[in-house]
Image (cartoon, rainbow, N blue to C red):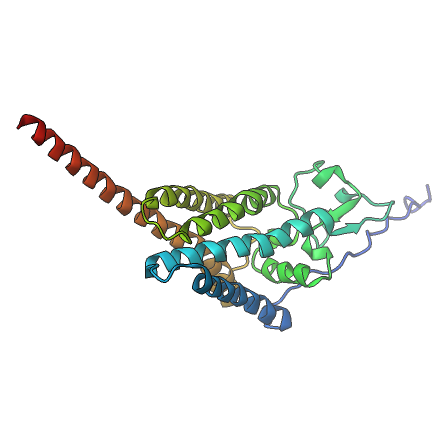
Length: 272
């Protein structure tokens, strides 16, 4: 102890990890990401032309394109998000722990204190620490919603269901729609209802935790982040599922009305 105070030096600051992408700039990553979405949509349309029977109605074609596009988005984009969450890491120096980074200006940790993703206190996970094109893609989206650059427990667990359950289910629906017979339309709508309900619930659980806490991870200051990334792209998975639920309700109501009419005719015949 010196006369003027403690002679101990302050602990050194933890070294800086890669700086996440930021700023409302439209660069090559932005353009490539948007073109990739259009490419998947174009692929879904091309598949509908090749797979669907010539007698397919416009409604069946739209349903097929939507569900195949849905599956491709889940497998390619959200599958790559999971890859970043499980396999893209930044190794912390041995002299520092994850707790040292909780106030770092370039890092937002989404796990509670003393809770570590995959139990690894020495590693940071997520797209922010990668350099591949798919990491860059999620770094771009993370400019609007920071959770997609790291590991948010709710988001990751929802995406596991999305990739491994919703994606295959959407493919199964496309296979069912590709069949020409119309007798099993209600069975097809049943699976569409299951998927559409899951999509709406997934969207709610993605954004509701943000809304009730003041949206600390969302950036709505830029028109592209707000209207394109957050509203438009996420809104598709609300509008189309709601439309599908309405179409399913109409189909089931019509089928029930026809069945009731048959029952009435049979009842009247008995009286004769």
